[in-house]
Image (cartoon, rainbow, N blue to C red):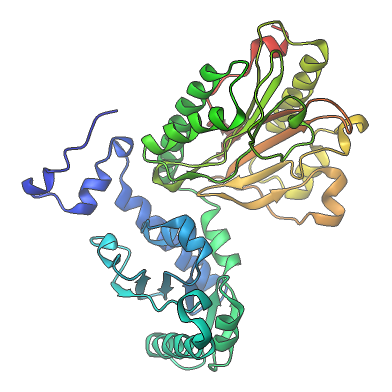
Length: 419
């Protein structure tokens, strides 16, 4: 990967142009990507009769504007930075001292320092701070859109939301318009998705090469994380890498356990990679040195079969209910430990829609339509209840006008497939 000449600004490049010229951005019109995403949000605001959005989720701030700053910190400390968005105005309230980071973004009309309305920032003065924050925001919104506005808010501390609701505005949940906006990717946006995937796949190849008896799960997982950060990714959202008996049941976080000979090693990437896009695929490996056991191969074969059956039924225009009805039936032996979803949307994180197993649809499922431009991750976990090991596999695809296109390129394990 080529290095950037950070002294290029002496040659007339602005800071934003420097970032857009990063190696992973070659061939991607990022200004077009940012403007498309902002337009998508405003279209959904109009559709759901939302006059203004107060966006506090750092992932959604980045989606709507391209502004990237302290995402993990901001997710924990809300509202540390937030975006006020109407049909005509975009004001980013940035963390104090960080206002310069949004310089040059065509999606932002104005940057102001944020008023942090949290107990950590305000102490015993929190109640009055929340009222001041809500009064300020409500006054600004009325100035921009008129009296009695309908305002979409994301999650904040409860007192902030309560104070806002007392300001004579109608407060609604911002999640629906934001999730629906993110669900459909443009062709240029897909280039960002692919760039993130390729970088993550290079990281997983390094992880695979580092597998050996005696290495700890934590050390192995760190190989992935180092490569992701080196390629300008943001972070790994979960710690889903485990080995041997810790692969069953699923969702055991990476630990100090050392890999033993001939165990399985299961990984779900969950990488928020370059451009902020989610690289979400799963693979299971074999430590060696011997060949995988018959039981290990059977687990892998079934997981591989589930993923590929479900990839085979996906098509544009299919309803979520129809997908659920046609999806692969998990054998009773493995049903109790099934992954909680059959497939899910994917963008800057896991997102709308959730596609449920047939067994779970009646209690948890909802209907909708699979549309071109949706990026979906098709999941499988196969591990018997009380069994010794399990296998996690997952592929990432984009829905096209005629079918699906596989985005993931990382290979499956021929020894575990029995080839």
